[in-house]
Image (tube, rainbow over all chains, first blue to last red; front, side, top):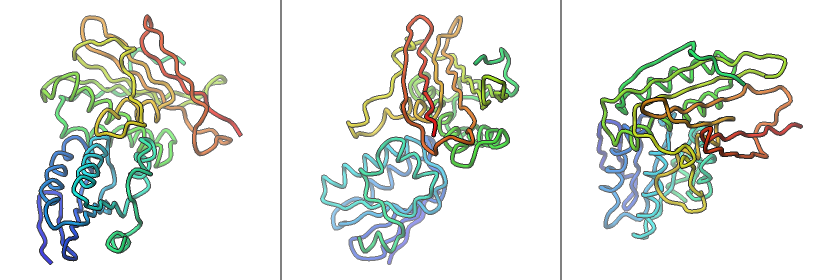
Length: 116
Length: 175
């Protein structure tokens, strides 16, 4: 189970082929490029599930949404399942405003995401 | 609904994304003091964040040293109004026709282009106009919640007058 840390993104591998990306701060225009880079780096051969754990994200703007939409599309192209978990009410609101709440696979907990 | 000429709070910042968090905090805290709940405060802060991001990205082409002014005033209740918050955002970016400031269709799921839609969805009144000389002004109004108001807004209508700027107004539903 290898773990990697960046300035605000923690990456874990709880199982073979499963990657968890967990940002540890709010995601806005100043941070979404780093999230995009992290997701691109992790989404490669041998990864069948990418979990984005938003437990420590209390705020996200449309640049964060755009990053996740792009990740979802790339995941579809590589037959990787992308699952989002631990989304709080404020972050959930922006998914609803953008009407993207049904576009993503969103579950309650990381355990649910791993077993999804 | 008339905005005072001079806002009660003025903040000048440079167009660096690292200051978005500070602008959000300020707007969110004031909205909370005015009486908005946590979710509405977060949405109002989101609208401001999206407006600033659009200016940085499109108006200033990611130049991080250009000026942006945020003005905030409470909209006090009157016999004709339930009160709320008025936020103006001024810049010196290239001028565009106010009517061109439209959100894109959401059916086309793709990255980007959501900012204007989010602003119009979150705020009750949104209008863009060209400033005298240079730059654009965005004025946003969020009305305070009424005791009899449903949790979600519906029955929206939009209007656009090219001569007076681009103004979107929502009609609030009642129980």
